[in-house]
Length: 158
Image (cartoon, rainbow, N blue to C red; front, top):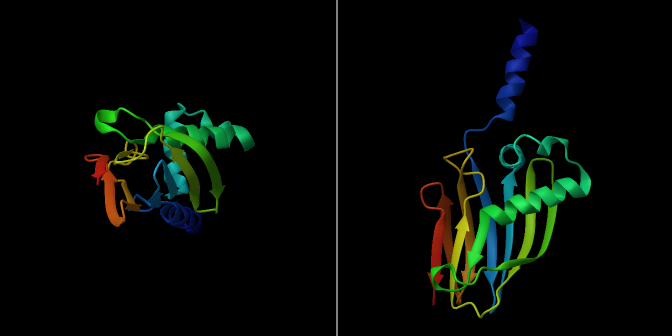
């Protein structure tokens, strides 16, 4: 009985009832610098689902490449109206602090950013209650945004 109690306690410790990511973004004339932190277990479960159960066997550069591919597929930005100028990833540094997976990324626009649409739906498929919370500094003002499964996209204009 003691073994089952300990096992149940360990399982409960691994689970959490809130699914969130935190991010901070800074927009310049033609770039967006985005720093985001995802709970590691939520991120890895979503990554594994996206790779049809095959990501658990990845290591080193292969794992980092898979993480960046997932990140850029589920965090996308456009600088023009009606999704006309998608920003591209120019730099990305991924770290793992044990409990979180952290991305420090810069996205570049081929046009000056006068309007920015952000679509941040990472982890929302696996966890419908996922909230991707970010603060973004753009056009001289700071905005707080929550992207989730029901509203993953926001647009900011001058």
